[in-house]
Length: 168
Image (cartoon, rainbow, N blue to C red; front, side):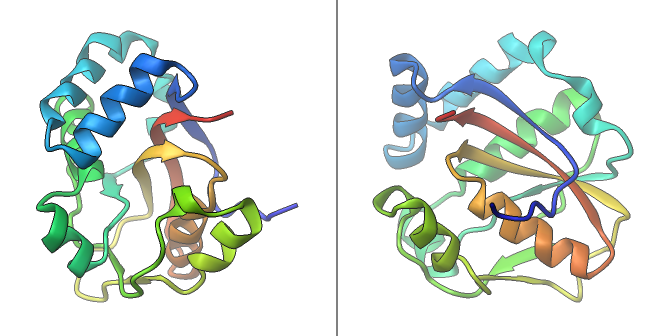
């Protein structure tokens, strides 16, 4: 069993729902990120305890080459939407993805964990917080969230997470 470095998390939707999967696919791969505004319609269902003690939102970063290719990071867009109703700032540069990895969707569970090992670093120039909320689009094995939380915890920064959807 994989050790968890985050404290707690919340997932809004099931990725097994075909409409949710389509919404994420369109926003992630076809620049239709305005669909993500649907989060606002579901904010009353979000467990607000995930924000307890949190000082900032941190989107899971993309590698600069992947970001350049796609043109945007959908997790940043989700973080901006959460920021509007939570009042928390988005910290854009706290984490950096320095290793270009394979797409997680292509990999099995153990491969996902190994794929992301040492892929993220803490930007030493970023403002430090005591606790943050890591924001991602899809939670499958929690490997991405966990690796980000591990880097943060090594710098004495606690983390919760928010994911738009999960396969479990």
